[in-house]
Picture (cartoon, rainbow over the protein chains, first blue to last red):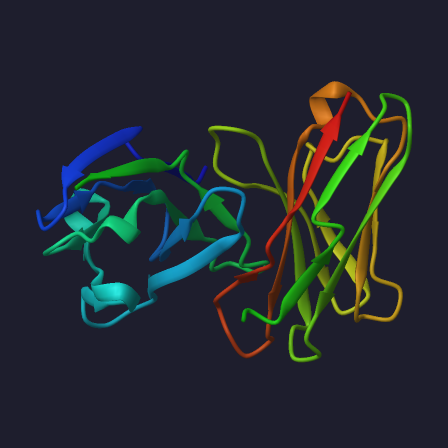
Length: 114
Length: 113
């Protein structure tokens, strides 16, 4: 069965520091992978996605993620965090077999210190 | 703008009452999804429509829940005889036939008191 694990429930970084959020997935075939961000009380905004090809994908707001098949990982990175990046981040794996429904991780809440 | 709007954004209801949420995606979104998100959790898949046909339902969708998309455009999610455990955010998402990305609306918060 498909699953997504985000090992870090909370992460705190200082503004200007680098960031890496971890995501591990379990899926039988080549997965579709996504990172979404959610501000309090809001819906989900797509940051970036991986379907195939180049394993390093660029997204909005200066985020990037790297797909590593051997490690079943799709970690999200940002070289320099801004205070406005404080939010909850969700990794998701998409079902490529038909419905394209997503399985989400439990999220990582990012706190940014000024 | 994701092209998906939801109404109402917030609903407080008494236990036992019925509630209905509406989702309006843009016409390009042939596929429509409903998800539920409880505090501290990621969204969980509830159901999926291809145009007007409901093609998949999660086991999370109990008999008290019903979703429709009568003309393949807007969709409604009704919860009958609400329980406190139904308190959550209900997210609607749209997807074009030609794409693999799901675009979420802002969500509808339900609080059952």
